[in-house]
Length: 100
Image (tube, rainbow, N blue to C red):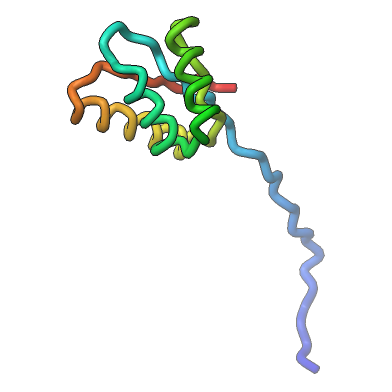
C-alpha cells in the first residue's frame, strides 16, 4: 500500500446551479401567413399539429404566443432559426426570448 500525506485541507464542493431558463415568444405581424407560423412551430419547435395551431392562434389573437421554455443557448438558437427561415421566405416573423 502506498504512503501518502494528508494535508488536513478539505475540498469543498462547488455549488451546482440550474441554468437560467428563457421563454421563446413568437410575435404577431400583419404579413406572415398562418400556415408558415404552423410550419415554424412544427419544424423548429417540434410541436404536434394541434398544439402548433393553438400557439399560432394565440399569436394571431393576442399579439404573441409562448412557444416553449429553454436554456439560453437552445432558446437563442431557435430564435435565430426562426429569423433565418422567415428572412429566407420573405416574411417579417420575429421571435424573442424573455428570462423566466
